Amino acid sequence: MEKTCNRKEFEYLEEHTADIAFQAYGKDLNEAFQNAAKAMFNIMTDIDKVENVEAREVYAEDEDLRGLLKKWLEELLIYFDAEGLVFSKFDVRIRKEGNIWRLEGRAYGEPFNPDKHPSKLEVKAISYHWMEIGEKNGKKFVRVIVDI
Image (cartoon, rainbow, N blue to C red; front, side, top):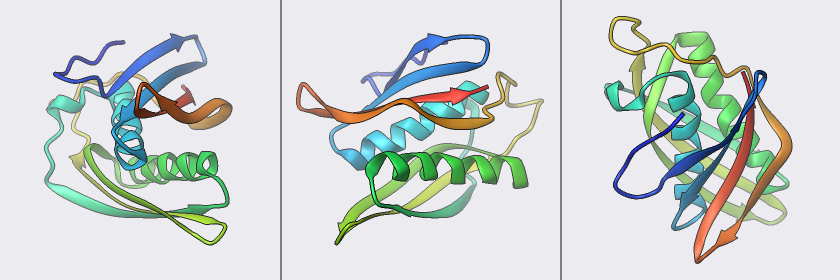
């Protein structure tokens, strides 16, 4: 599974019968979380074919960044499961207040249409296994495994 773009937003690391690992990059945590969401939805469909005609607000908080990342991606999956929405553009703002990390986000996309959006794999869950958030070569990255 490959995503082609002018700059490296994400890459797929491993694919097994039950899960897919990816790493997403950004100039900061906000962009890395945005690109993680792109990578996740690109597993399900070709995000280049998703138009940004609807938006949904996403709020999450957790005591650590790994928990925040998991909750962010899970909230997006809930919109897919409950409303059939696929997303391709994301705005994220992460901040720390005391001991709590907070995320305010917005996802842009449209209802899944099998005539327009190729059906790939269904993402069932986000795993803590092998999840990492860090910095490499001056860029932030997040590594995630999703269950398919």
